[in-house]
Length: 94
Image (cartoon, rainbow, N blue to C red):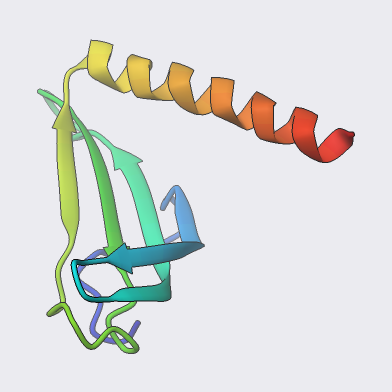
């Protein structure tokens, strides 16, 4: 990910995760960076950012997606992630 738009450092939430870019006429597996953050001073939202490795992606130009969430929205996503994580753990434990 040499042409990365997001800064990746020790504080980045997830540096490399498996990802899939899907379009009407393509589907490409890739690696991605995911980060949850808020401004250090006077934060006004929680930012959930992700960027696919564009070194192997041929359908999309280099770009980063960012969701700007209220605290309640961030908690809703966190709760849903926890619920689905438990389901996956339960399924893999069987």
